[in-house]
Amino acid sequence: MPKGSKPTNGQPKGSSRGQSKGPSKGPPKGPPRTAFQLLQQQLKWVDLIFEVLDARAPLSSRHPKHSEIFGNKPRLIFLTKDDLADPRASKEWAKKLSSENEKAIVLCLKDRRRQPEVVNMALELSQEKLKQIEAKGLLPRPVRICVVGMPNTGKSSLINWLIGKKQVKVADRPGVTRGPQWIRVHPKLELLDTPGILPPNITSRNIGEKLGIFNLAPAGAYAPEDLAERAIHELQKRYPGAIEKYLPAVENDEIPENLPHLTSETNPDEEEDGQNWKTERDLSITKQSKLNRLSGQDSALGDESDDNLVTTANNFTEKINLQLIAERKRFLTTKGRPDTSRAAAVFLGDIRNGKLGRVTFDSPAEK
Image 1 (cartoon, helix red, strand yellow):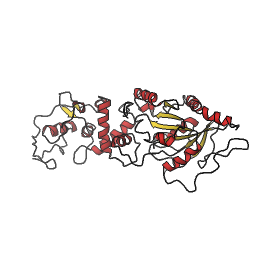
Image 2 (cartoon, rainbow, N blue to C red):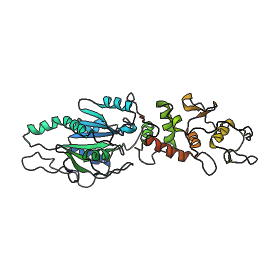
Image 3 (tube, helix red, strand yellow):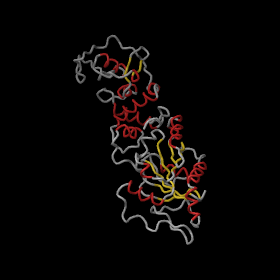
Image 4 (cartoon, rainbow, N blue to C red):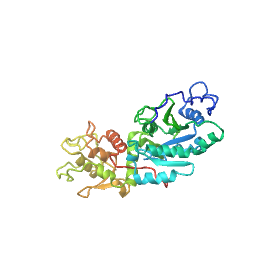
């Protein structure tokens, strides 16, 4: 494998006499103000686009104006994090995204055995450009490739995967890549690493929440508890039974007959005769949940459909929501209430790490 070329300021190296020359003018003076402006400059130097999407949300993690931004330049589309995504959905997405000028491939960046296949696909898409260079009587030069995608979709990981070493800084958070650098990955291919791009305003909450669930949105854009509730909805709709398998088993479904009776007038923040289900330490969290629902203190059942309900061994029906996850996981606040904040953080982390199975929240049938 040829050694990677030294990082540059984003402009291809000039060619020797008789060879094809890059653009005569470099980038405008002064740094671009935004990552999007930087990308617009870099696209002038490249022949081929490597577009990186998260396989768990291919539609949501694709820039809505990708056709306008990239124009007619050929593209190789990567559906990364395949080991965390639904394999059936990934296969359908790869088929849908492929066309004459665009090829899609599902890729797990933990295995480098498909690296030659990716190089060959890139060379195949670049044949027209190479023919144009030869027709002009210029000596061959490497095809210049721009790696593009939203933050944290795996752009830098893809480059490291191609060159076989960690030459580009990566991390599990958006916005780690800061400056452009040219990297030779093959005698005929060189890559330009770029910061990820994200629409400045996410007008669709549907897309924004999916990005947040998979850690693709800017930190703080959405409350973790809102994202967790949305994730519960998506899992119940697309993968029924996944949350039930994830929840710890109920140790005891019986409610003791001698528990204090609570009415709808009971103030949950005050103790009644020293017995309050939210602060009583000798009750299990599951028993607390049941007592709360039976006493009318919680509207958890609401008007939800049967898809959001789980039935215990003794036919006690509970709604699957963040509060139930906190109760089953035994996450309590100091006052004995379900700690939904902690539950949301743990639940989202478990989804991102694949502990609820391989999931995809975008369907190829969606627009």
